[in-house]
Image (cartoon, rainbow, N blue to C red):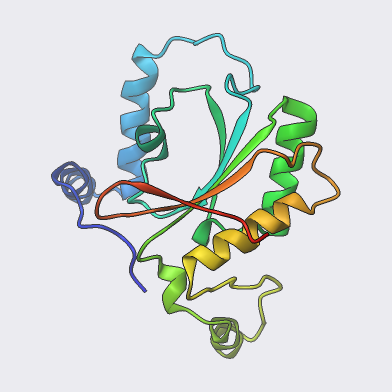
Length: 187
């Protein structure tokens, strides 16, 4: 499965530079962080998002959530995983986000051409055969992004741990146009 977009010239340059200097991509990123930190000034924010919103989305590198949603640093909590599906750990993060840090709204974002659409739960069996241990987690693969967004909205709405379940909205991001398409929940 490959869900990555074509590498940018900057990424290629960073990778090539790391390779030339005998380092890794991580070494190059740490070097870039050193430059970043030299000009960094503390923005004086706290962990509570200004817009009181948490965004749950896929980890796909093609999704620049802040740009796509017009968000600035400090506006939201961002929770990302493979597929943007609502798992127990997402509920854990949303619970902390709401109960300890004041968020009230949840936005769920899946996207077109997701790598999870090409997997099945058989992926777990393949891993078990390869490494001798079955993962305790579910793959959460799906073939219909709209339906999985509806399922994710339902999981959030019915969680007993969340205080605020009245403003839960779901979307599918089109990776070719950059547009969000809202998915209405099942009645």
